[in-house]
Amino acid sequence: MRIENSGKLSVVGTPIGNLGDLSPRGAACLAACDFIAAEDTRVTAKLLNHLGIKKSMLSYHEHNRREREELILSRILAGEHCALVTDAGMPAISDPGEELVRACQEQGIPAEAIPGPTAFATALALSGMPSGRFCFEGFLSVNKRGRGEHLLSLRDEQRTMLFYEAPHKLPRTLQDLSLTFGDRPLAIVRELTKIHEQVIKTTCGEAAQQYADGSLKGEIVLVLQGAPPKEPKQLSLEEALSLAHAFLERGMKKSEAARRTAKESGRPKNEIYDAINR
Image (cartoon, rainbow, N blue to C red):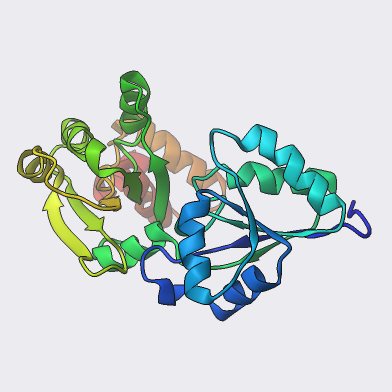
């Protein structure tokens, strides 16, 4: 239930590099809101200075979110308008802002999204990888066991996968990707929308060797090609015949039942047709 006379939360996407990418609507919101909840107020101050905006800010990040959430909610419930921003990109995506959005929903506080640049979508567009279906996996755990289990769970994933990674952790991550996925095609996309923007088309194995020295710097998105479709398991003739009889019982003609069974069982159509007629 919506709370009458409360303020609202605006989730504002901010530039991931080039300050010119902030939308006019985003700039207008930052100018009009009562206060800004920012991941790092020093970073957001640079954006506000670029826009010529002076605004009250408070920090809201992973390490203080629980104590700050209560303060932010109380101010919004008192009628204030809060703009939520991160250092770069869309808040609440692989970001503690998701909990603030959820808390607002639970309190009946209206929340709106003002879209902006998102690093993983931008990286996917530049990667040249299949983009019809993909999954965003965020940051891998720093815990060795946790990251190992995470990667193993994705070994048969057929969709393109996207990961965020910090430059100082990249060599270890590339090594783990190589161990898990072998020589799978990989795009390393770095410094998006900045002067040194770069897309490196490589493989997990090659990248693990070439960048083991930690030479790659900047904000990084890894775009990993999905696994090839698995070959269907061939059924035994007895299993295929049972499937064919099930099709026949549904009213299919023998030739159609044999064709459908061949497609699903991996066995020759003529073999199945002959078995039906025995």
